[in-house]
Image (cartoon, rainbow, N blue to C red; front, side, top):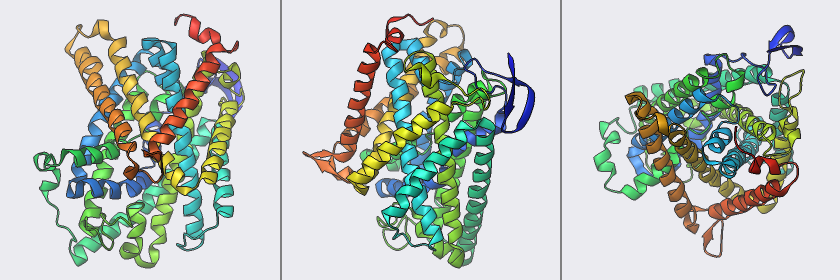
Length: 495
């Protein structure tokens, strides 16, 4: 199917169109791999998470990263199998609905949307902080009257880019990716030079990967692994763009696997290098210093680069902006699919015919993110931090339920071959179980006030945010169930 049209790349006489009206066949394997990596905001994610992991597991941080990667890889295999069968940009929403029914599908779609909107808000806020820190040469004392409008403009800009078509978004993403990795390369070289010239603050040791030794304190290891799992969130953007790829059934799966493997290698290399340069001590620039846990790379930028420390801020800002822009992609495609299938008002399922992009839903996402951000700003910075941590519960939920959907969908073919048994059955099931454990562990852990920045009634603020968002989801589900515009979604059979 084709349609005459004009895209951001110029006139085209035969632009392929996907079943939902999106521009088909425009993204290749390299594009999807880059987008899968960019969606995690890898430089920023590691900078703000590594200190927390070290505070739990110390020198076993590299091991925690590897263990956190395992369930992610297993769930990625489940996504790949489901996508090969039904390449739909609704991903978890569509696949879970087909496996377990409309209510489960709606819940998976809502969890995907919540995770993306909350992360967009967090990245928009942090991007504004880093931008003003860069402008003011490292000063973090910036008035909210500057950061809040800047964050809203950044979020609006990312949604606008998404509304202008996938090629514009991909070009913006490519530029931001180059910026962050060039700047990161400068930092990595400086770290290597520092280690060679001044000696390692902590000598590399294979004991950092010793599972037996780490299991002497399984509780703390579990906390470190739980944090590591969510360093990889975002690779499923590859599948959200399946209808816009050159081979919807195969390219997204390859892109997701390549991006996750590349990410774990980058994370491991940087973690080892940072440990050798700064050590895991709890003072100075040590990764275990609680004063540095919120941004370990930012804390050592002057030690590593001296007057060129601003390069680290550039890398972090590029990573944040890249992650924010890429985060808009999956949520708009998921909501588009929900609108097309009747789970949400049909208006959300519309695609602008010229740009072949979900323009309406892009601005709905900005509206939701903007309102949520203003509410968090009113409630205070500590609530915003708890909100950012609460997203892990929703991620674990929709990853786990999608993995189980894979097993259920292919249950009749598991005995056909060893490949089917392992890749459609055993491995996705194991991934789903591990993510369910992460989900339950997250609920238990976040209920404790000591793990949150805020608390009320003896309950941690993170769990309170989860409960508020879950209640909001239930309310929207009930509205959709009884609304004349969406009632048929819940009562009709899945074709």
